Image (cartoon, rainbow, N blue to C red; front, side, top):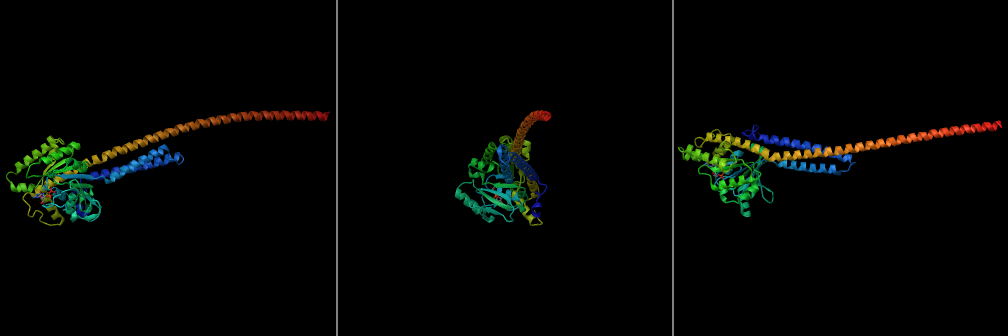
Length: 416
Ligand code: GDP
């Protein structure tokens, strides 16, 4: 649609690689299925219509293939946002979605997990937990509050469905997960088990006005203990406020944050080397990006109206983050989601090859057995033929000598 494709995430998006890889692996599994069906038909026919051991094994392989195809259809790229309450997590998600999808601001504390996925419908909705009914997107905050009260846990998840046609990122199969504030003393392991194990990228939204909190650091220590080398980006958000409040100190503050964040990712968590860590830290204003993108959508002319100086630089920094984040998301998702399907597909093909080799060897052995039996029958037949011929010859001779004797007797009688 023109709306979604006018966003810079259109046709050239690095996320396309995920879509292409998904298409290619889907095709491969389609081919595997065709080969399996053909092999199954041949094996059953060879057994005179019965399944037999070979047919049974191809049925199991076909079931495995169908299972993988089902998981493939659900596979998508997942990015999860963490940080203290009010650091701007929901605002960052809205900026990436180019729309105000999630409630953000005072009184809009996210107190349960929210997952945003793309749907084909033209209007957004929330799935009511339990009943599965669709509710208006405006009820999101109320539903989140009651879900939190009802379960008294921050671990619950609300699904937000948003029209794919409004957002290029959602068209590319990305799921966004917004979390409650990490300062809410969560059961960290519970959070990680329920929402993080299949996440491809984590975004820590920090408040540039302060340093990283221990709760934020501890959370990521636990994540990196559970997942091998998680992909973590750090967004120093509210950078517009810092620039506005401390213009003379801004470079110094930025350098301090940069060093601390790089050291956190490379030395403390040891998930990445310092040079790559530099590409994982950004200084942004999600609020400005939301404002600018809203104005762009409405075709307003003065995009920077009322924004602080330097907003263009901060927008560029956000766009740099988006590009790196998409590359990382796509690469990670291709590896985590498709690598295991690839090896399972290979296992299926090798098992089919082994089965067909075995069956063909059996058939060759049976064939040579039949050939030698045939030969035996033929030589017996020949033997019989020879014997028959001898008996026949003898009986002819006998008949001939009997005829001669008869003839001589008749002759003798006539002469007598
Ligand atoms: P969350 O609790 O982490 O999801 O935070 P929200 O996204 O709800 O944001 C909390 C408040 O901070 C809202 O009023 C936002 O408008 C505001 N906010 C978010 N990002 C920025 C930013 O970059 N700059 C400024 N000035 N305000 C921001």
